[in-house]
Amino acid sequence: MIRSVCVFCGSRVGDDPEFRAAARRLGEQFARQGIRLVYGGGSIGLMGVLADAVLKHGGEVHGVIPEFLDRIEVGHSQLTSLEVVDSMHVRKAQMFEMSDAFVVLPGGLGTLDETMEIITWRQLGLHDKPILLVDQKGYWEPLLALIEHTVARGFAGEETRKLFDVVRDVRDILPALGLAAEEATGKAAPAKVL
Ligand code: AMP
Image 1 (cartoon, protein in one colour):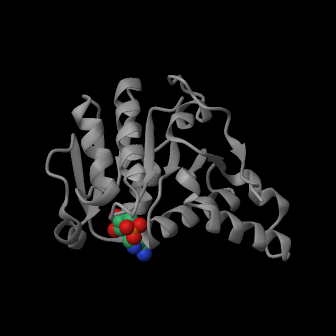
Image 2 (cartoon, helix red, strand yellow):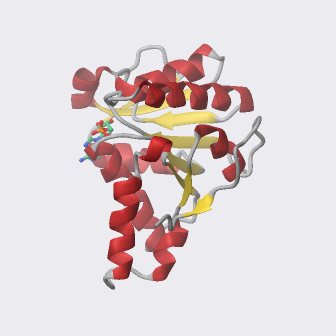
Image 3 (cartoon, protein in one colour):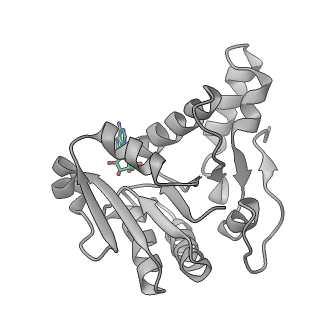
């Protein structure tokens, strides 16, 4: 049963207003479905937009932020709960422990780091929690192409594609996790996109 979902996303908002709109829509959906958001605790970028949207619609948000980042990323002061931890490693471990599934919205290097870690942990059999890449407006296509490249060149197995799913739109996230949502656009695609 999925009750808590961890979202990895940018500490910036990107170059397209659609990314912010997507974060807002996802936050509203989580609140309406009673899904608790677990995330990095910041108030800036898509992270802040997402957390604000969950809170605005009456949902629950748990943030996990390292002390030194609490200053740089400006820890969100209105969350249901904000956990201040010692290091990035503890942050990621804690977000992992508290979550039943992982959703990746557009983001930068930090988002990539978190995404690769959670995928490789699944590859190693350390967990079997669903991972969804939200390829909003094709943002993750270069990453998906790179992953395909690692398979094509023999550095990753065919099963790599089954470690995560790809959806094209925020409306498809909850259905892909087996949760009800209004007017989904379709089913989650397997990771292979090329
Ligand atoms: P970004 O995608 O770079 O905007 O970062 C998104 C989130 O990932 C932010 O909360 C960052 O603090 C976090 N982050 C940045 N670098 C790393 C890293 N090397 N390991 C883990 N998380 C990171």
